[in-house]
Image 1 (cartoon, rainbow, N blue to C red):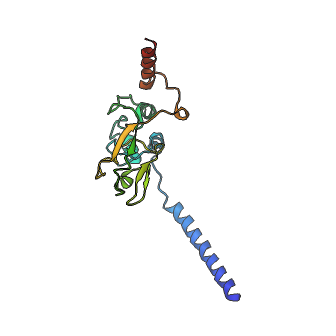
Image 2: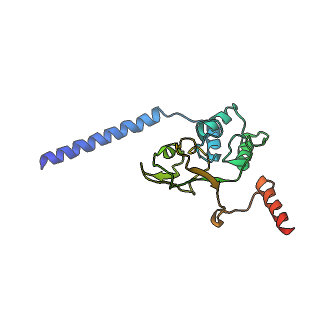
Image 3: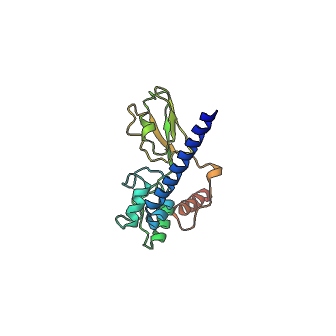
Length: 192
């Protein structure tokens, strides 16, 4: 019984010393990030899709903060994100680099899927689920439509389909945006 007590006390003392060392190390080796880059990164959609030409949202935020690139490269974020970043940076907003298109999601034709898992590895947001040599499917609510899963698929069984606008995701469009103009055009065409 006495050995168990000594073992427990020595393990507790070791954990306490290791905790103190780690706390001191976190204070001594702390590196401050760029606060502007942090704010820009918070505005980006965090899809890590690479459509901006950078491997993820954080490197793109760093490039914007350092003035290396313009604010108009984030396609998934669209006009709203571009305007928010331009306002934060105090620069003139520019037209989006790529035209904003209809939101799409990936759809796996399960009868053709061979279960190779290459699409799962390519998806930056883990929206594709499945097991090796089993059918895969896409969680539509998580899919950002970045199309990174299309290229690695060896049997070409992934399609990009238009994402349905469900009632629980619908919101009033901001005034003076492309979405508001599109809505006005649709209303006018229905009244004719």
